[in-house]
Image (cartoon, rainbow, N blue to C red; front, side, top):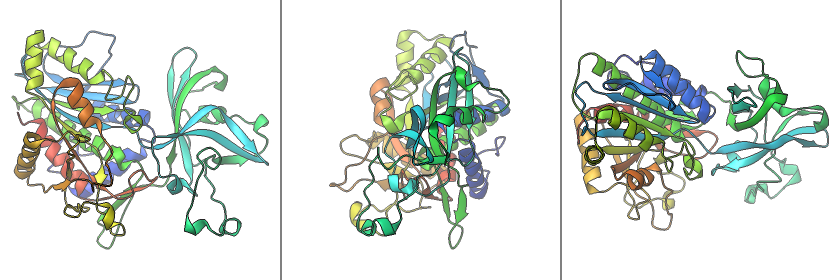
Length: 441
């Protein structure tokens, strides 16, 4: 990863290859923050413990809380009213989560009991080689990351046994979405023991596992393809594409700041968990994690309560989450006048009902940033009869009162096990984000 040079100085090809490496290392939200922390450590950031006092003043820092990570760079001349420029993203993706008593099966098959997590396109997970990944928490409170290799599969029913399947596939989430992972009597096997055997560098007794947060992930490697190598396919682009862009930009920004650059806002990467299920958790955007960090950073700069409010009023949040490119086979599902395309630049996401937090001043600031960065951008708005989803943007704006704009990388096949973007757009998002981190509102 080109962590010691600017995002603008790297190439789109280098960025997309590094995005693929990041996604491959991040089959769960816990792996995503672990890999991000590893890269931040390598770049000279200091990891902080919430239970300990924090260093005051300038520097580059990060905090991990469960499957979320907040990282920030405080410039040398930051004061009690210095604003925060925040890039918000999320680490989780639609998938399936392992249930209690996960070892199931019938008719000689070993199966896994899973619960649908978020809103995955169920059919996209059929007939793929899949893995389990997440964290195991022992009875003594210690935690271990675990990730298997190819292990599971949701097998589709053969067309000979369902002649009408091509007229409409209906999948029952309870009956049909039970992956197979072996042959035998479930009474003789333990899926948790399989997971425990895939903890790197540690011997884990499965009988001592007290809890777990484990999801299913695709095992196919990310890939570049297309007539001119213009496409990039991968799992979890929603929303590791934005998390990675923010990470690359913050590392580059920190490197520039350590080279003597001063001034500007406090740059923050906020990578939340649980966005796909509503963000209502201690590590989600509805929770206190971002506010906790901003308050403690502000306290370290000697801010009074009033000065902290001044700092928030001078702050800005770019909520970066994936958006929809126009689908050539379903143009009627899109707004007739706004047709974002792959490699047309990041999206500016707009919704009259504030499902996205973009307003006119925010849109103008985004346009200014993209112009200065010489990066094209595209506007996205939904068809009136196809209401859009929402993001962390409105949640952040509501909780903290910080002006927020919603943006993102355009995708096809959003919430599929394997999504599609253009090779240029993630790099462009990183370029604009790096400029954003050093630009006062």
